[in-house]
Amino acid sequence: MIGFGDFTIFVLIFLILAVLLVFMGVKSVPQGQQWTVERFGKYTKSLDPGLHLIIPAIDVISRKLSMMEEVMDIPSQNVITKDNALVHVDGVVFYQIINAAQAAYQVSNLTNAILNLTITNIRSVLGSMILDEALSKRDIINTQLLKIVDDATNPWGVKVLRVEIKDIAPSQDLIDAMARQMKAEREKRAVILEAEGQRQAEILEAEGEKQAVILEAEGRKESAFRDAEARERFAQAEAKATEVISEAIRNGEMQAVNYLIAIKYMGAVNNLATADNTKLMLMPLETSGVIGALAGIKEIIKAGTFPR
Image 1 (cartoon, one colour):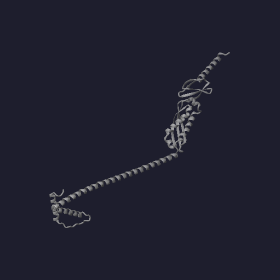
Image 2 (spheres, helix red, strand yellow):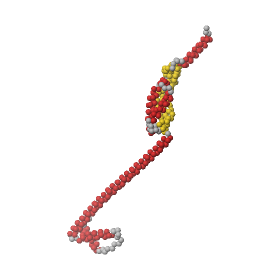
Image 3 (cartoon, one colour):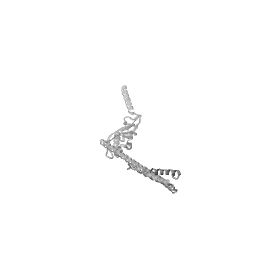
Image 4 (cartoon, helix red, strand yellow):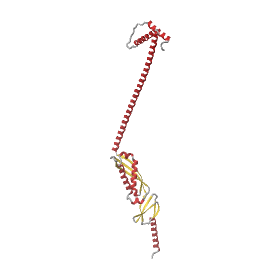
């Protein structure tokens, strides 16, 4: 027969077990997480954030997964480009679990799998590019890596949000070679620019000389034209003067003859006086003849028979 004391102990044990079972069956999932539940070793459901009840000792929590965006650093890797240049590459991956069951049961180590997948594809993408493309087309590299890694991790219940290459650093000997190459390119451009400048200067100088020759020829042409015009007018004047003198001679005016002789005489004297080798000139002059000729000129002018 069970006594009152034994019954009390049994009740207390039962209550304690009930409280323990309640605590074991009530689960509170924090915000930003999902928990997977297994029953006898088989996945049954995922618990969203909030308060949940499970069957104690039958249902167990197998995995607690963060559903928030995660950041994974990619350590520096040695990569050989298409033109056999060695570079050191590191990066970062932003991903988020969108299906807790797939992330828990499709891959054994999700973080390590994403890391190795990203490293492999970094080597693959950069290995298909030459060094200059790898250094200048980082956005294209990021886009290609994002598409490849996101497609590969989709069966794992993961969404890859961004893949960013942080640094692409060539080896030191390659950096020195690039510096020498850039220096040579700058010197080459300087020589080309200098040669272009000299060529342009020579062209401008030739154009200037051409214009000067053209202008000089134009000047000579204009001068010749004016000289010819002056000679023509002088010849016309000489012809007119000869005509007038001839008319005066026919009319018996001897002053015209004296005028003609005086003009020739004075021209000859002028030529002798202006000669370069003339030092001293002595010549007899008939003053009355010269005066008479000049008087004849005056008479002709007064008579109006000489053109003005």
